[in-house]
Image (cartoon, rainbow, N blue to C red; front, side):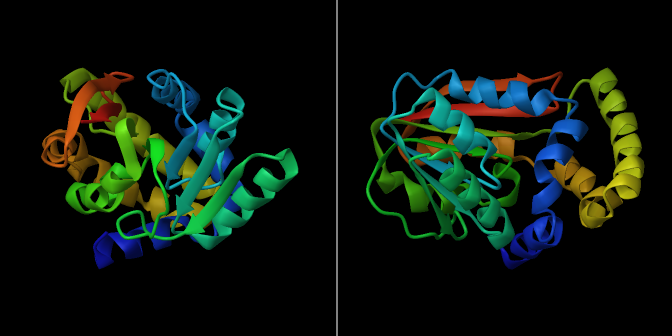
Length: 229
C-alpha cells in the first residue's frame, strides 16, 4: 500500500469502528449481506482461512458459523477495529486470532485454504498483495476478492451518482465521525479505481487461475474468485 493509500485508509477508518457495522449495512442498502454471501459460495471446505482487512469481524463471524472447525486469522491495519474484532471472538468463543498489519507486507505463518477480503482491493497494489500472500495459500486454495466498482451502464451510473450524493449528504449529518468518507473522498476513489480490471492479470501472473469474475448489483460491486495452480 502506498503511503498515500495508507494515509487514506487511516483517515477513513480511525475512530469509526463503533459505527462501522451500522454504516456499512445502512449505506449499502443491505447489499453488503448479499455480497458477502456471494463470497462464501465457492468455498466447499476450509480448515484455515485468512480474512484480510477483517475490520470488526463481520466476515470472520459468518465464516466461523459456516466452517466451525476452521482456524481463522484476521488482518487489519486499524487498531480500534481489531479491539472490536478480538472482543467478538472472545465473547463468541470463535477459533480466530487477529494480526495488526498492512496486507501487503504483514508477516504470516503457515498456509491457508482460503484468503478472502471485502473492500480491500481498491486500496492495495495487486502485485504487492499477491506477492506477500501467495506462498501462504495451499495448492488448489482460493483467493476471493470483493469491492465496490463504478457502474459501466449509463443508467446504472446515473442512479449510482444520485445515490452517492444523497448518501454523502445524509452520512455527514448522521455520522460526523465518517466525515473523511462522506466528504466524497470514497465516491471519488470508487470512480477512479480499476481494481476489477487490474487483479485478473495480476492473479494469473502470480500462479492463480481465474474461476469467477462477476459484477454484482448492476455494476456497483465486483467479485473475483481465483484458484492457486
